[in-house]
Image (cartoon, rainbow, N blue to C red; front, side, top):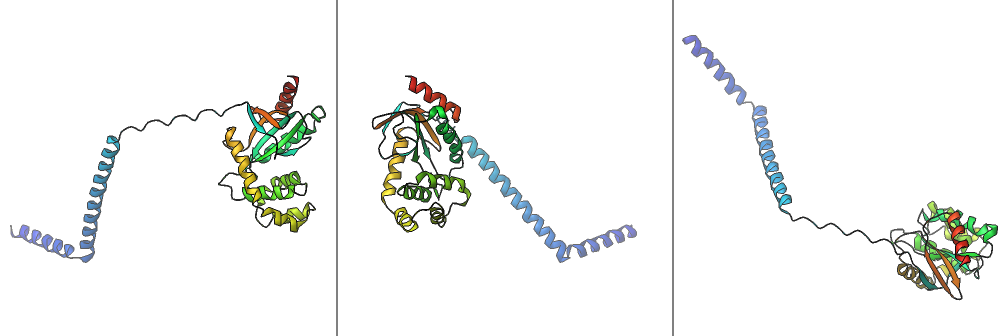
Amino acid sequence: MNRTLGLFGTLAITCLAACADPEISKLASDLAVIKQQQTETLQKLNALETAVKSRPAQPAQAAQPPAPQGPFTIPAKNSTVLGDPKAPAVIIAWSDFQCPFCSKILPIVDETLKDPEMKGKVSFVFKQYPLPFHKQAVPAARAALAAGRQGKFFEMHDKIFANQQQLADDKYAVWAKELGLNVSKFEKDMADPAFEAQIKADMEEGAKVGVRGTPSLYVGTKSGDTYTFNRANERSAEYFKRTVKELLKK
């Protein structure tokens, strides 16, 4: 009996000594805090789950209607034209100089216009449609329009698309010099507020014919001072040449 009590006494003394250790006391305190935090987190998760389950079902968003196909009609005046402006057929593109997909239209247009069968039958019209999240789209548009006042819109157009990854405010004058433009006049023209109105007019026309992004391509005919056209269903030179031939037969 005495030996048993002695053993329990020794254990009790050891336990008291251990419990008196500051590190063990701190550990016990930290564990209590963690347990409390876990309990509070679980309560919050349960409350969140209940709130989510009680929310009314959100109505499904209506699918965006398909883009209008045409026919559309716009005035031909104030258009930037590549090729014979009197050609009976026309390809029209609403485009953004900083859009990577727009640069892929160049070889398609070139192949179509340079085809011997298409000579004098079709022209290309470039319409401005700078997207708001492309910071250099408007400056690039102004650069092309300024070059256009010296008869080199499409030369600057090609230069910009060829250097699309380098678009910057200090590049346009450099390219103007490379194209043999009067740089002083070019820089002055770039600041002309008339270009803002021209870009806005192109974008408003684009909105009327269902432009939702760039590039938006159309093909149709020119009669007098009017373009009549439909949305292009493909993006290939073969499609444009085939469609132009069909239009001219009518």
